[in-house]
Amino acid sequence: MPIDVLCAALGDPTRAGLVETLSRGPASLSDLAAPYAMSLTAVRKHLGVLEAAGWVSRSKSGRVVTCTLNPEPFAELERWLTSNRAFWSAALDRLETSL
Amino acid sequence: MSLEFTLDRFYDAPPERVWAAFTAPALMADWFCPNPSLPTACTLDVRPGGAWRCEMGAYVVSGVYVDVEPVSHLSFTWSWEHEPDEPVTTVRVTLAPEGGGTRLTLQHAETAPGAGADGHRGGWELTLARLESALH
Image 1 (cartoon, chains in turn orange, blue):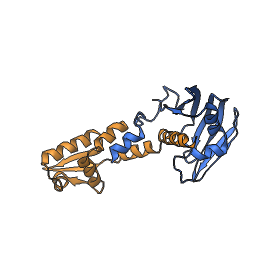
Image 2 (cartoon, one colour):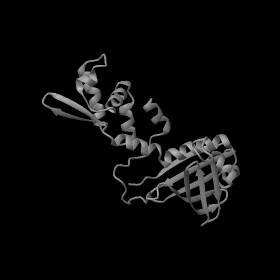
Image 3 (cartoon, one colour):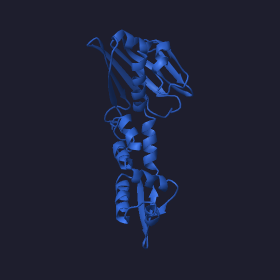
Image 4 (spheres, one colour):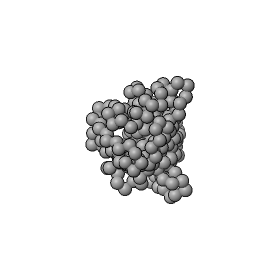
């Protein structure tokens, strides 16, 4: 998944909060929605964005929907952050102040 | 898929000073590491085939110079010592005078274009600033 798609999915406080909650373990849709003063439909929409970006997987068992955080996006972000591009971008910024 | 990227900067300093920043070990140690709190030391044998090495705290990156054309072109191989399995890459730095200052172009090519690479590595278009704002 392109880095900008991963980040755009997180660029919303509700979605960032959902990802943080799921980082502690899988949760049902209703448990996820509980802290938010918004409808189940609204939370479901946010989860849909996260799912489309690859952050979350949903599984259904009977009538219970369980959401799980996927590990790959974090690994991808970490990889990018420690990448050579990030290194050079920061180094070239420092070069400017040292000249 | 190629993991090549190019960065472009303008510096308000003549090309000779930017060249010196890349080729004098004491000057390079001043800016090379993105993390200013890591002690940085560089040894640079600036000639084609010469070795270079920079230590930034526990991180070491090193390589060999390929092209050395003062003051306009410097290229060198690049590999991180803690990632020996990663392909060796090539960095090409070009300096051009521009309006009293210097236009610096830095190209970092990780694999030959067309060569197979890990399918999950995406494009490198997002800037640090966008990532920052997306994560906060």
